[in-house]
Image 1 (tube, one colour):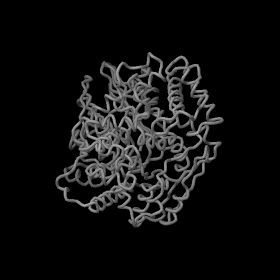
Image 2: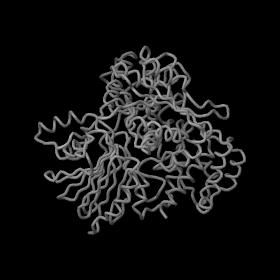
Image 3: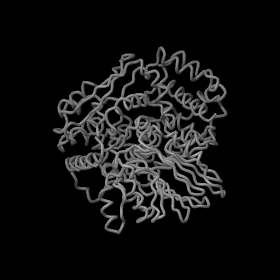
Image 4: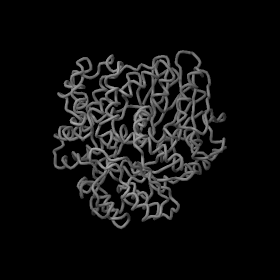
Length: 596
């Protein structure tokens, strides 16, 4: 895992190496093991390296192949890189490193933009063709690796974080009003290509963008999962689906052990991460390092799940680390986590993952995580109400159980100048649900959450917070072949047993029953969910800061009312609404400070 940056100019000017250097330096946390710059006339690339595959200098980036006339910068991991290397060698290619980066480079030389179809992994990369001046940007199927873009008539810049683009200078940091509507409605999710900043866009998942030397741009979406029934599996029993799902997950977990450094597991004590540990133990993995985190309880909420993570660690004999976070670390951790966000993310989990990443990175460079199973396999409580809802009523049913607030309520929070004339979030969901390839209302919701919500909330959260410490997080439940299989499973099998029924039943006899039968847990940070004391004061400071008043996003009467009763107003999904407002202001203030 790494950080990448680059620029291509269309105005006849040479790329500014000083700009590249500033952008790349801003990515040091993502790649603490090395750095590099490459410039050729109007184009330049920068890279910060986290050494996971081929630890030698031969794997350094930007990687240049003069014979092929290509330069690449790459962030991520290609799990099948050894198999692809053998295939490319048979096609006549010769390699000077043992890195997966060179496989991407040679793969592009062999297959062009179609190389992405051959890659099993998580990735964002940029390839420059020396002769044509063409730039190709690509992002993995589930959007696990980020890629942000600042495009103008005279040039395009791109980077792994928004902050790196801001460091380059000249970014339009005004607020995108449509993105703001999504943030306030869609549980802080701003779907690609938008971000909250008007001047920054993100490359959508499963997309290859080709940028010609004259600035002409075209996008190609190369993957889209189907959430319909497969005729060839019409006669499958529930047990058939369970066995196929478990076998697919075995493959996904094994793939994610590919590394030249040790790989650990973030073990929450829930079924998803516990199953990852169990499958690794089943494969004969020994001495596996596992990590769980806990906070002080507050407001009647328990702050840790050590009971279950310890049970799993003892059952499978892992080298387990219970990380108890003292409240003295939590308050400064809030601002540090906000600074690490490429986009504002309201979940209190962000602070937990940030502090967890800090401690885990002292032991390992790579971990597997159970992230994504709930979205892919129907684990959340907003899915059952959609069962049996006719497809024509699905948008309203989904909005009722998922949206933080409905459109009329926006006027109660936002100042009039920030209100849109139309309900953009509902229009967006209507468009997504109306696309072919989802058979039922539950299928449509799962497809939306897997390809959009998951990308721009949980997955982005884990990437940002772990990579803040140079820690690579791998997500087997988002193996694209696993996701394709899961999409074909009849919804009733997913919703069984309170959600993720097909996974729970497949896990019997593999993980302890206590973990399967427990009440669903979340990554708890009670002091943020139940605002009080110094945490409430931090929120108050953000919302009453002179910068917040100048920006004028929120109605003062609404803010004052919420500050009087900080834990009274909750979103549909139970998040603290005051925290949602404050988090946005904290993030915008940090970007504003950086842009000065």
